[in-house]
Image 1: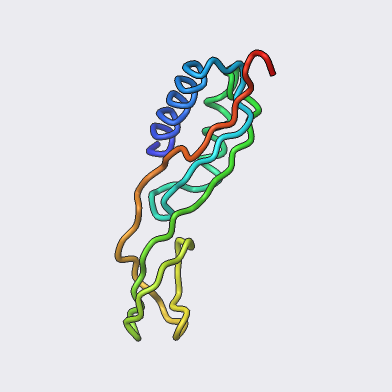
Image 2 (image 1 turned 30 degrees about the horizontal axis):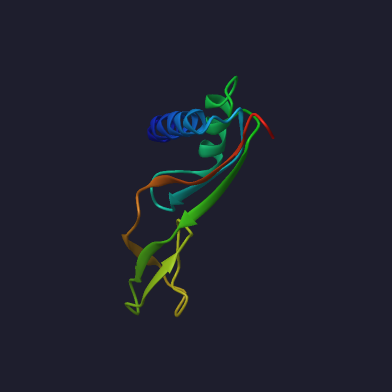
Length: 117
């Protein structure tokens, strides 16, 4: 449910921005998401498709970029970043514990078609 509420806000912001720019259609949306921010690619894409039906965004390409989380290995104590939600230590291969992440979903870019294009 968290993903749905966030995606509703994202779609609302995209529609408002497109309207403010005088756009007739949105062709591409680039989002940045925290890898541990409770988002799954499948859910984000599904919500995006459903929430953009019958809007100026319908049919737009969705490009996702994942922000890494910080991990620390439980064995060798090495700290590292990864975009995997289940990371193992690159040094010793043991289990790593997530120590911080960026819990966000933000719009990086919106490509639009203007009336005279």
